[in-house]
Length: 96
Image: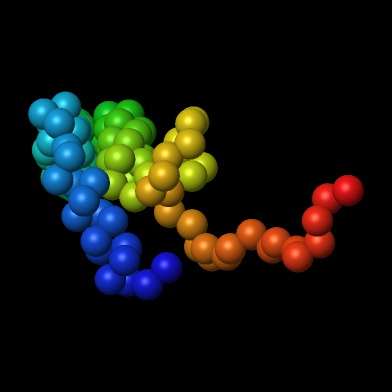
């Protein structure tokens, strides 16, 4: 898949974001800042693993929504990201 196709796929999927998706995006961005801020405070270091797990869950959700990753999609989606798009091999032989 070429970069232009990947960007077009991402743009089409982001255009369909709901309020929940934008909220997860905003919360994920804020969690990233909080994780960096916790690195400088001794009182907050015990929360860093929990915050990292929440941030990772948000990132995985957003990657699934933006790129429709086949590994994370439970059901079929026509816009799945595939590394190679090959046509099925057909033969000219007729079934008897």
